Length: 414
Ligand SMILES: Cc1cc2nc3c(=O)[nH]c(=O)nc-3n(C[C@H](O)[C@H](O)[C@H](O)COP(=O)(O)OP(=O)(O)OC[C@H]3O[C@@H](n4cnc5c(N)ncnc54)[C@H](O)[C@@H]3O)c2cc1C
Image 1 (cartoon, helix red, strand yellow):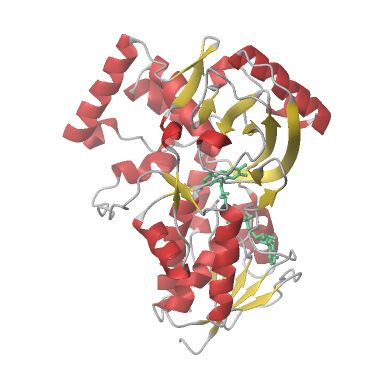
Image 2 (tube, rainbow, N blue to C red):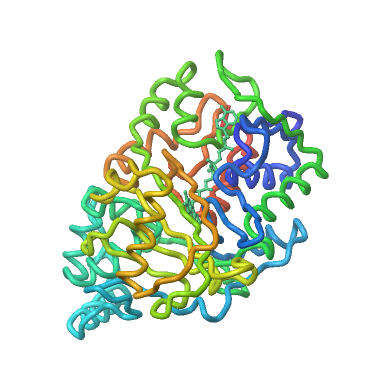
């Protein structure tokens, strides 16, 4: 089995980390990447004003993340202590605790039920985030807690997102206790996520992994050796269509959400939201999902001035309106909202708008239904990516290890 070469399509985080575990398991690996560079969505762009991330600004730390960084010889950059402050926008003001006394009691009551009788508050099959939230947390906590927090991760519509898909690990029976990392929370590489990608690529090359850039893989006939498809959902559906139309159809049914990530450097920071950032719940009907205050998260993010990343798009009602705007109009919206929400008027020193037309899979009840087919690894083709059940990098890293284990388990895959 290990005399076979595993091909990986896609040198984004999913592809590189799957290669990392395959190499560790003793496989020969070849990575085919359509673009001239590794990283996929993850790129760090440097200029005189800021160090800007085009997608993820960090990764939730875990024992897996620490092992990865240690193995590739990269120090872990923890967040600054100012980032402990997080804000949610409610009734015209950013607030650290956006709940009333009644809402706070609802949270306590939920926790009490969760620790005493977990299944009494578990999501039901096919239940949306909003319906589940209203049932177990009440309307206020759902609107200003649950919906705001999930918007910051999934950018989805709470009326359509699947509660059991998103929270299944919290309620899974027999879920193994995970080893605790030494640093809690989000981490990065000292010079940003681009440094993590660069170091991982160098490590893999030293281990004999062959990179084949500017080569878009296409499949015509069933494969003799294992293939890992580590692309976006759209590219995976195209790739699989000739050899596994059923899985290709299931992947094509995944709705993809557009995101605009705009990093603006201002000469002064906002006064009312100095911390990790601020989330805007859908109920506040704002054109943005959230804003990250980069200078207060990791050192060196704003080199001259104060760097903020404004995230727009997703499935929100106002997304379509924002997405049709040109870059200058987007910047005008940001400056207007910054003035209204944070009462801040500052000079803009620089700006970078990154558009991802199909960045994130919508974690809907329909995706929940399609996943059992998507997850069937057959015909020597293994799928990994943010549409296969885990959207965040930390969970993708664990999925990469599992994928390598499945390929190693001789007989299971052929
Ligand atoms: C704005 C934004 C902010 C985010 N913030 C966070 C965050 O803070 N924390 C977090 O954990 N996650 C975050 N995420 C999510 C995370 O960045 C993504 O889920 C993750 O980077 C996806 O990686 P991937 O390797 O699966 O896919 P991709 O990065 O899309 O990589 C796929 C690669 O496959 C290549 N490819 C496609 N087709 C082919 C083909 N036929 N042959 C060969 N190669 C091909 C592509 O060129 C690409 O390089 C964010 C996402 C966005 C958009």
